[in-house]
Length: 447
Image (cartoon, rainbow, N blue to C red; front, side):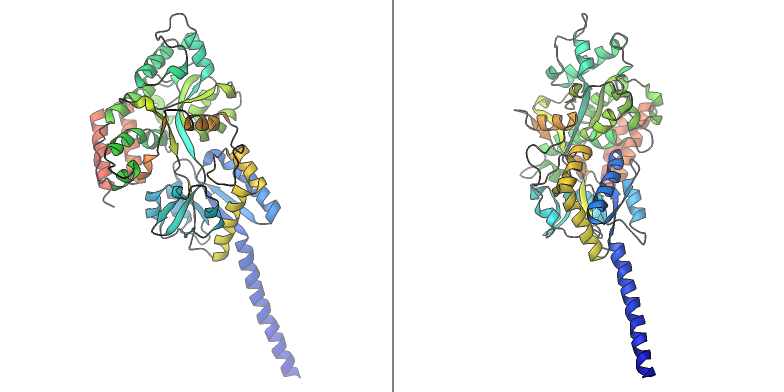
């Protein structure tokens, strides 16, 4: 009897240990680690996390990489014992770097609600990146300042509205005259600071060269797309480098900040300058709406926040609108447990299909989300998102796709950004910058 009781107690002990281990694993699977790419909306994800836990009991742990440090943060975090389950890849090149970690999502509910399946990042028959937002960028302008400028009796241009700016020559004439009349307009400069603080040069080393390279790859695409031509390019001519210089110089020479001081300026600084009515223009995307509307002392009315396309002085440029696309693709870490992977997919599906989740997407994250769960009236209400939708539907205008997904590496962008800063500071000529662009592309394309 004693022997039988001993066996039963031993079995109970073993069983208890098994259940304890199972509880621990279940507990771990109830926390989702999400490595967020977008610092400008980090605080919103904190709200999302609380709402999701309140509805489901599952905790969402959100860690946000500092601006310009996502790849190195992901490299560090994914090597840890408790790595991110949800992370971001920036397109086909990003997939190449992270293919060892990305799960195939083609059979998931999240992929099932993606409106246009061609938007996903794929390889073979697998789906490894699902876009979660369509975005656009160009030159944001304060129409109140532009109207005040056009009312000046001695203005140097014949046009009377910002909507008449449809090429670089007109943009240049308006910008330079605004800079000349900045005191009369009560502003510090036409353009906001061209930020070059560490991690803050992405608008110039990534977004600005997108359009010159689009022109180059579009001419070489044959029967494919400009993006496919870019992905296949082992070398580039940078044949529209002088066009890039046109617009970049316009930013530098008509800025609120002297070129020698730009190395310490951040994106936040430039967005604050715009929000406070100190400048008429700033280059950025619709994701920056919160950085305008959320600034204390903001003087810009919603109805005065508008977009212009990037004009470089290229023939035929008036037919092109904003740069619209995405480099934001969710990926799921296939090296974590199946339970954690499913929990992550469940969260993302909730975010883009539940009423609570969609409320955050539309109202606070400000995403133009590419999922069939959103109706025609379920779009963000911020002024820049509305401008994206307006430009998408502008008759006779073609959006410029996001070619920078074909850039060979993050190192390429870093080296190019450093060369631009040195040009800004006068320690490199433009010819040297173009040489660095071409040689770094070639070197990075070897890997």
